[in-house]
Length: 555
Image (cartoon, rainbow, N blue to C red):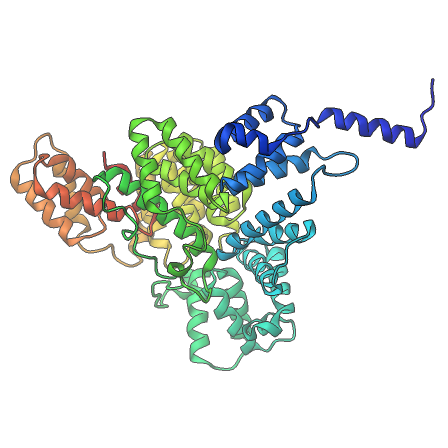
């Protein structure tokens, strides 16, 4: 047996590594001169597919991606080069390293605009690569984003990490003094009120409960404590008056970006409305309590314009494969592919393609663990009929959401769409167990309806009895259900159509009745145009289930 010295062994490994990843040089300028940017990029893609470990091809492709303004593609190539690696580290030039750092910094800043926790990882990677100067306040903001995500978590030790981070940064924000161990009861209460505004409801309740046990009388803190108590334990605060949670910033006018010159296509426009609204909701989930409005940061957050989304939706009518390609173009042009993937995923949800939607939601959730994105994947799995996966993923999303009952109700509705009624009941039991006063009526009402749907009459009656003890249903609800039943007849007469029309005027949010009336009216009836326009608007509703119902109701 021939012995091999360490130096010789290292040399052998180096040569083997070089052989495993192509080092065939590329004259990029000559290639672009002969083929043009787009075709040169396609040639490199073919070379990469033939040998995924071809480092030179990937580096050249990343350089072209930067020129073609497809930063997400460039990042994908650089990360592949890092994975290939080698005994002496990643084989790239200083210019490649700096370009990668700049792309990561840009993506990190986009993610930071929506307070995504993974923004810190991107910014720190960019710093380690070198060649990028980041303002210290951006890194502090990124650490705060991580802390906020942790404070919303259902796990106590995870919340404690977030509290400790803010306690260390208390000098920069007076309200965070309440996060320190030495804080007074009043300082803790002030911190608890702030925690409520960012959606960290369990953490808020804990701080306010400590004030309630030891603090002095204060009407403002007492109101905040009663609200948090009613969320945490509705039975303990059944008499507390609960207002609408106004911690979300107002959404921008969803119709503002629709291209007025485009031909009217109600289904495509509704799908674009829905996808844009879901992107805004993802941002708002991270920005709760931030000192800036959603309307002012949509451009910074890199949301695809609605005219682009409508273009993808119109292509879907002709050929879903073409829509998929156009959607990928939108994703690759985005500075942060995560939000873009979630937006296109929501678009395919609204177009009634659960398979493509689920694939994109999965890819987005693998890139980011933001609760709203993980919840989006849970809903997509549910609508695709995979109840087991939906329940597992929903557990993760609910745990980090700040208000888990809301996630469970949304996933239950998605499971009902996917004909997974028993799984929907499982989700609704979690929702009922965890619901606060604002969510409990909807959870109980849906649990009762679902129990009756699967033949569990006694269980349905128990849920209905619990629901009856809470606030009464909205006025007109019964009358609208009667109108809906009559519209389901084979040929409803003019008086039934007129009564249903009047009922829709009384409830601007009733999607089901509007959809049924559109189906019953003649094509030349002027009321159809009004109803279709209203359904397009409702596709942007803050309630994702209502928005999806509106989008799917249009043919």
